[in-house]
Length: 271
Image (tube, rainbow, N blue to C red):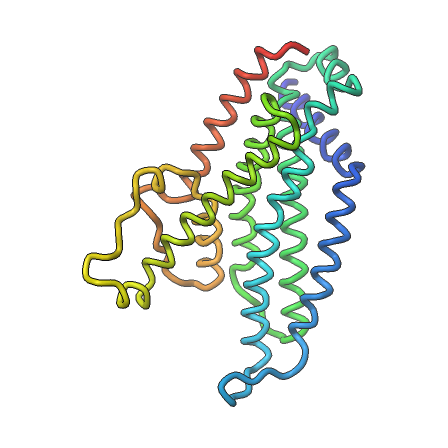
Protein backbone atom coordinates (compact mmCIF):
# COMPACT_ATOMS: atom_id res chain seq x y z
CA UNK A 1 0.00 0.00 0.00
CA UNK A 2 2.78 2.41 0.99
CA UNK A 3 4.74 1.67 -2.17
CA UNK A 4 1.59 2.22 -4.26
CA UNK A 5 1.15 5.68 -2.72
CA UNK A 6 4.77 6.54 -3.47
CA UNK A 7 4.45 5.40 -7.08
CA UNK A 8 1.17 7.28 -7.55
CA UNK A 9 2.62 10.55 -6.23
CA UNK A 10 5.70 10.02 -8.41
CA UNK A 11 3.42 9.62 -11.44
CA UNK A 12 1.36 12.71 -10.49
CA UNK A 13 4.59 14.69 -10.14
CA UNK A 14 5.77 13.73 -13.62
CA UNK A 15 2.45 14.81 -15.12
CA UNK A 16 2.42 18.05 -13.11
CA UNK A 17 5.95 18.98 -14.14
CA UNK A 18 5.17 18.30 -17.80
CA UNK A 19 2.47 20.99 -17.55
CA UNK A 20 5.07 23.47 -16.31
CA UNK A 21 5.94 26.18 -18.84
CA UNK A 22 9.64 25.89 -17.95
CA UNK A 23 9.60 22.31 -19.20
CA UNK A 24 8.47 23.33 -22.67
CA UNK A 25 10.85 26.29 -22.84
CA UNK A 26 13.75 23.93 -22.13
CA UNK A 27 12.32 21.38 -24.54
CA UNK A 28 12.36 23.99 -27.31
CA UNK A 29 15.91 25.04 -26.47
CA UNK A 30 17.02 21.40 -26.48
CA UNK A 31 15.46 20.68 -29.87
CA UNK A 32 17.16 23.78 -31.27
CA UNK A 33 20.49 22.62 -29.82
CA UNK A 34 20.14 19.13 -31.32
CA UNK A 35 19.33 20.63 -34.73
CA UNK A 36 22.46 22.78 -34.49
CA UNK A 37 24.59 19.76 -33.56
CA UNK A 38 23.38 17.95 -36.70
CA UNK A 39 25.45 20.37 -38.77
CA UNK A 40 28.65 19.11 -37.15
CA UNK A 41 28.18 15.72 -38.83
CA UNK A 42 28.14 17.24 -42.32
CA UNK A 43 30.88 18.60 -44.53
CA UNK A 44 34.61 18.01 -44.75
CA UNK A 45 37.12 19.05 -42.12
CA UNK A 46 40.85 19.44 -42.53
CA UNK A 47 43.30 19.46 -39.61
CA UNK A 48 47.03 20.04 -40.26
CA UNK A 49 46.38 19.61 -44.00
CA UNK A 50 44.90 16.18 -43.40
CA UNK A 51 41.33 15.18 -44.14
CA UNK A 52 39.45 14.09 -41.02
CA UNK A 53 37.02 11.20 -41.53
CA UNK A 54 33.36 11.56 -40.58
CA UNK A 55 33.54 8.93 -37.82
CA UNK A 56 36.20 10.92 -35.95
CA UNK A 57 34.16 14.10 -36.35
CA UNK A 58 31.05 12.35 -35.06
CA UNK A 59 33.00 10.97 -32.10
CA UNK A 60 34.23 14.37 -30.94
CA UNK A 61 30.95 16.16 -31.69
CA UNK A 62 29.00 13.53 -29.74
CA UNK A 63 31.31 13.83 -26.74
CA UNK A 64 30.93 17.62 -26.70
CA UNK A 65 27.15 17.24 -26.97
CA UNK A 66 27.22 14.70 -24.13
CA UNK A 67 28.92 17.18 -21.80
CA UNK A 68 26.67 20.09 -22.77
CA UNK A 69 23.46 18.07 -22.31
CA UNK A 70 24.57 16.52 -19.01
CA UNK A 71 25.70 19.90 -17.67
CA UNK A 72 22.69 21.80 -18.99
CA UNK A 73 20.27 19.41 -17.29
CA UNK A 74 21.23 20.92 -13.92
CA UNK A 75 19.50 24.11 -15.02
CA UNK A 76 16.36 22.16 -15.85
CA UNK A 77 16.44 20.44 -12.45
CA UNK A 78 16.70 23.81 -10.69
CA UNK A 79 13.90 25.39 -12.72
CA UNK A 80 11.52 22.48 -12.18
CA UNK A 81 12.50 21.65 -8.61
CA UNK A 82 12.77 25.05 -6.94
CA UNK A 83 9.00 25.66 -6.83
CA UNK A 84 7.69 22.19 -5.98
CA UNK A 85 6.82 22.86 -2.35
CA UNK A 86 5.96 26.56 -2.61
CA UNK A 87 3.61 25.89 -5.55
CA UNK A 88 1.96 23.01 -3.69
CA UNK A 89 1.42 25.23 -0.64
CA UNK A 90 -0.02 28.05 -2.73
CA UNK A 91 -2.53 25.95 -4.68
CA UNK A 92 -3.39 23.60 -1.80
CA UNK A 93 -2.00 20.47 -3.45
CA UNK A 94 0.09 19.58 -0.43
CA UNK A 95 -2.99 19.51 1.81
CA UNK A 96 -4.87 17.46 -0.79
CA UNK A 97 -2.11 14.85 -0.91
CA UNK A 98 -1.75 14.58 2.87
CA UNK A 99 -5.48 14.38 3.60
CA UNK A 100 -5.51 11.18 1.60
CA UNK A 101 -4.00 8.00 3.14
CA UNK A 102 -0.46 9.16 2.30
CA UNK A 103 2.35 9.82 4.78
CA UNK A 104 4.54 12.90 4.62
CA UNK A 105 7.55 10.88 3.49
CA UNK A 106 5.54 9.41 0.60
CA UNK A 107 4.54 12.87 -0.58
CA UNK A 108 8.09 14.20 -0.12
CA UNK A 109 9.99 11.44 -1.89
CA UNK A 110 7.28 11.04 -4.53
CA UNK A 111 7.82 14.68 -5.49
CA UNK A 112 11.60 14.33 -5.49
CA UNK A 113 11.63 11.05 -7.43
CA UNK A 114 9.07 12.26 -9.97
CA UNK A 115 11.12 15.36 -10.78
CA UNK A 116 14.37 13.40 -10.85
CA UNK A 117 12.94 10.68 -13.11
CA UNK A 118 11.46 13.22 -15.54
CA UNK A 119 14.74 15.16 -15.84
CA UNK A 120 16.77 11.93 -16.15
CA UNK A 121 14.45 10.63 -18.87
CA UNK A 122 14.67 13.97 -20.68
CA UNK A 123 18.48 13.84 -20.56
CA UNK A 124 18.56 10.21 -21.72
CA UNK A 125 16.28 10.99 -24.68
CA UNK A 126 18.55 13.86 -25.74
CA UNK A 127 21.64 11.66 -25.45
CA UNK A 128 19.87 8.89 -27.36
CA UNK A 129 18.99 11.40 -30.10
CA UNK A 130 22.66 12.36 -30.45
CA UNK A 131 23.59 8.66 -30.44
CA UNK A 132 21.22 7.91 -33.34
CA UNK A 133 22.23 11.03 -35.29
CA UNK A 134 25.86 9.89 -35.14
CA UNK A 135 24.84 6.37 -36.14
CA UNK A 136 22.71 7.50 -39.10
CA UNK A 137 25.23 10.04 -40.38
CA UNK A 138 28.33 7.87 -40.10
CA UNK A 139 27.12 4.27 -39.82
CA UNK A 140 29.28 3.89 -36.71
CA UNK A 141 27.98 3.20 -33.20
CA UNK A 142 29.52 4.93 -30.17
CA UNK A 143 29.76 2.14 -27.57
CA UNK A 144 29.00 3.05 -23.99
CA UNK A 145 27.26 6.32 -24.88
CA UNK A 146 23.85 5.41 -23.47
CA UNK A 147 25.35 3.62 -20.47
CA UNK A 148 27.28 6.80 -19.68
CA UNK A 149 23.99 8.73 -19.83
CA UNK A 150 22.48 6.38 -17.24
CA UNK A 151 25.47 6.98 -14.96
CA UNK A 152 24.85 10.74 -15.19
CA UNK A 153 21.29 10.15 -13.93
CA UNK A 154 22.85 9.78 -10.46
CA UNK A 155 23.98 13.42 -10.74
CA UNK A 156 20.46 14.45 -11.72
CA UNK A 157 18.97 12.75 -8.66
CA UNK A 158 21.57 14.46 -6.45
CA UNK A 159 20.73 17.88 -7.89
CA UNK A 160 16.99 17.22 -7.51
CA UNK A 161 17.31 16.25 -3.85
CA UNK A 162 19.57 19.24 -3.18
CA UNK A 163 17.25 21.82 -4.79
CA UNK A 164 14.31 20.38 -2.85
CA UNK A 165 16.25 20.61 0.41
CA UNK A 166 17.36 24.19 -0.26
CA UNK A 167 13.84 25.25 -1.27
CA UNK A 168 12.56 24.15 2.17
CA UNK A 169 14.59 26.89 3.83
CA UNK A 170 15.27 29.49 1.11
CA UNK A 171 13.27 31.51 -1.41
CA UNK A 172 12.95 29.67 -4.72
CA UNK A 173 15.40 31.78 -6.73
CA UNK A 174 18.00 31.83 -3.94
CA UNK A 175 17.71 28.03 -3.62
CA UNK A 176 18.37 27.63 -7.36
CA UNK A 177 21.41 29.93 -7.16
CA UNK A 178 22.73 27.99 -4.16
CA UNK A 179 22.50 24.65 -5.99
CA UNK A 180 24.08 26.06 -9.16
CA UNK A 181 26.85 27.50 -6.96
CA UNK A 182 27.53 24.14 -5.29
CA UNK A 183 27.70 22.34 -8.65
CA UNK A 184 29.75 25.10 -10.32
CA UNK A 185 32.26 25.11 -7.45
CA UNK A 186 32.73 21.36 -7.85
CA UNK A 187 33.15 21.63 -11.62
CA UNK A 188 35.72 24.43 -11.36
CA UNK A 189 37.68 22.93 -8.47
CA UNK A 190 37.82 19.36 -9.74
CA UNK A 191 38.34 20.50 -13.32
CA UNK A 192 41.37 22.57 -12.36
CA UNK A 193 42.77 19.70 -10.31
CA UNK A 194 42.40 17.21 -13.17
CA UNK A 195 44.05 19.64 -15.59
CA UNK A 196 47.03 20.03 -13.25
CA UNK A 197 47.34 16.24 -13.13
CA UNK A 198 47.74 15.93 -16.90
CA UNK A 199 51.17 14.85 -18.15
CA UNK A 200 51.69 18.07 -20.10
CA UNK A 201 51.09 20.31 -17.08
CA UNK A 202 53.12 18.09 -14.74
CA UNK A 203 56.09 18.26 -17.11
CA UNK A 204 55.85 22.05 -17.14
CA UNK A 205 55.75 22.27 -13.33
CA UNK A 206 58.90 21.97 -11.22
CA UNK A 207 59.45 18.68 -9.41
CA UNK A 208 56.92 18.30 -6.62
CA UNK A 209 54.85 21.17 -8.02
CA UNK A 210 51.66 19.16 -8.45
CA UNK A 211 49.86 19.30 -5.12
CA UNK A 212 47.82 16.46 -3.68
CA UNK A 213 44.05 17.01 -3.46
CA UNK A 214 42.96 18.75 -0.27
CA UNK A 215 40.56 17.06 2.14
CA UNK A 216 37.60 19.20 1.10
CA UNK A 217 38.19 18.28 -2.53
CA UNK A 218 38.08 14.60 -1.58
CA UNK A 219 34.90 14.99 0.49
CA UNK A 220 33.12 17.56 -1.72
CA UNK A 221 30.24 16.22 -3.91
CA UNK A 222 32.09 14.80 -6.93
CA UNK A 223 29.54 15.82 -9.54
CA UNK A 224 32.18 16.71 -12.12
CA UNK A 225 34.20 13.56 -11.49
CA UNK A 226 31.12 11.39 -11.90
CA UNK A 227 30.50 13.00 -15.28
CA UNK A 228 34.18 12.48 -16.11
CA UNK A 229 33.79 8.82 -15.14
CA UNK A 230 30.79 8.56 -17.50
CA UNK A 231 32.92 9.94 -20.34
CA UNK A 232 35.63 7.37 -19.57
CA UNK A 233 32.98 4.71 -20.30
CA UNK A 234 32.51 6.22 -23.76
CA UNK A 235 36.26 6.49 -24.35
CA UNK A 236 36.96 3.08 -22.81
CA UNK A 237 39.83 4.86 -21.07
CA UNK A 238 41.24 4.51 -17.58
CA UNK A 239 39.48 6.66 -15.00
CA UNK A 240 41.66 8.45 -12.48
CA UNK A 241 39.57 9.54 -9.54
CA UNK A 242 40.40 11.74 -6.58
CA UNK A 243 40.87 10.12 -3.20
CA UNK A 244 39.92 6.60 -2.10
CA UNK A 245 36.16 6.96 -2.69
CA UNK A 246 34.74 6.44 -6.18
CA UNK A 247 32.57 9.38 -7.36
CA UNK A 248 29.52 7.12 -7.76
CA UNK A 249 29.78 6.13 -4.08
CA UNK A 250 30.45 9.74 -3.10
CA UNK A 251 27.30 11.05 -4.80
CA UNK A 252 25.14 8.16 -3.55
CA UNK A 253 26.24 8.91 0.03
CA UNK A 254 25.37 12.59 -0.47
CA UNK A 255 21.96 11.64 -1.85
CA UNK A 256 21.33 9.53 1.27
CA UNK A 257 22.40 12.36 3.60
CA UNK A 258 20.27 14.92 1.75
CA UNK A 259 17.29 12.53 1.76
CA UNK A 260 17.59 12.16 5.53
CA UNK A 261 17.85 15.95 5.97
CA UNK A 262 14.79 16.38 3.73
CA UNK A 263 12.80 13.86 5.75
CA UNK A 264 13.55 15.37 9.16
CA UNK A 265 13.26 18.95 7.89
CA UNK A 266 9.91 18.34 6.19
CA UNK A 267 8.53 16.61 9.30
CA UNK A 268 9.03 19.82 11.28
CA UNK A 269 7.50 22.07 8.64
CA UNK A 270 4.10 23.57 9.36
CA UNK A 271 1.74 23.11 6.41
